[in-house]
Every structure is written in C-alpha cells, then in structure tokens.
Amino acid sequence: MTNFSMAISKLEKAKQYENLSDVVLACHYTLAAENNGYTQTFEGVLPLKVDTSNFISFANLTEQNVLDWVNAQMNPAFLQNVKNELEQKFNSTQELQTELVAGPWA
Image (cartoon, rainbow, N blue to C red; front, top):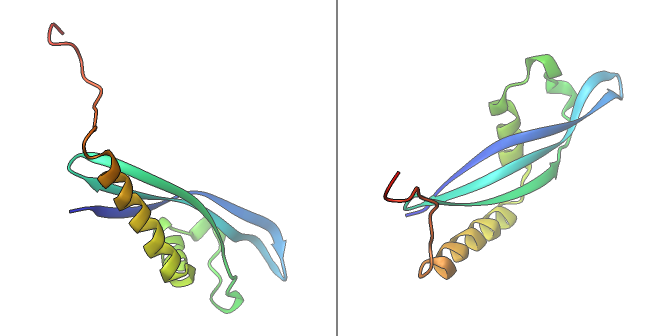
C-alpha cells in the first residue's frame, strides 16, 4: 500500500497586492509516496487565488493553512494523475530496487 503526504517547501509572496502586504501568490510543494520503505517524490508549483476577505498575514501563516489552500485549489484530476505516476514508478522499479548500505565489515 502506498501512503501519500504533501509538504510545502517554499512560498512566493508579493510585498504588495491590492491593499495587502506580504501576500502569498504561489507555493512550491512536494508530494511524497512511500511504499515498503521506498519513496518517490513529485515537486510542483501551484499559483494561489488570494482571498482578500479571509486574508491571513504572512507572519501568522502555518503550513496547514497553505496545505488547506492547495487542497482547495489544486485540480483533483491533476493530483490523481500525479499519484498514479508515482505508483507506476514503484511498479516499474519493483524488480530492481536498491538501497545504500554499509559493508558487512562496518
């Protein structure tokens, strides 16, 4: 079974946007898929729609706030396609999965 998780790696912000300061306009994210101790990742950038009526100042943002925005604004079909591609990577490398290990003398 594959477990998926998403993390926010970077934010793109504008110093001024409309009447607001330090506004996040896009986020860089990593979607990780873990299966039997192996991990595959996909990195992407998502432009964000600014909700001026529910604005959260940059200093008060949490990763969960941004993840909520991403989940609300990302196209579900795109996300499913990415997950499918990550799953296929596991299937295509299943026969030859390697790991970095110390020598038996260490």
